[in-house]
Length: 203
Image 1 (cartoon, one colour):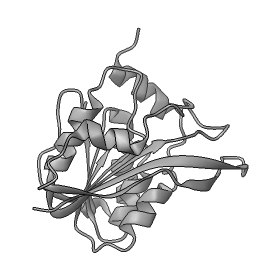
Image 2: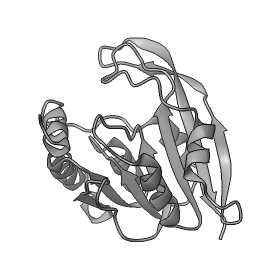
Image 3: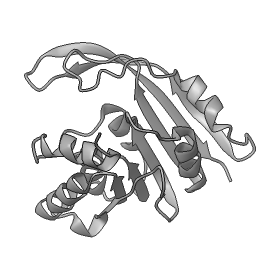
Image 4: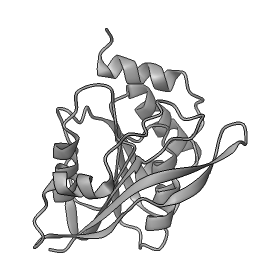
């Protein structure tokens, strides 16, 4: 059986080297914000990190896959934002990036391997500066073409309960499951549900 690193290296090696479009909920949430320091957990193909960097954010992007990290580093250089993107390999089951951030995003942070996701997201919340936001987005339903088809994830209120954050230090700004129309690689379209949790550090 492959290790988590080998598995995810294989996944990314079989994907096109170009960056995907940024996630819709990231652009919706981060679009109105002033740029600052961002942390992208499980950066994958790098679409979110590059979108943020091109809008002035300083981004630390992490992934368990060295392939993903190397590709994002190359793409940032090609797009002229290498000075704003630091891609690092982290197995979040054992290490977490240092630093303080104005935005931490975790899109579809799921794996078939053991990961205490609640602990990772609590660490992410603690890494926020006062006023900073943690954006967690999961699949509420999956498009027919989606890889993994992980559409049985807990709703956002359960994710918020798992984090068990002190109400004196963190406030939930969004906890909902909106729908959107997604476009697949062949141009096909389908309505999907996102589980969206947005938490702001208040002090």
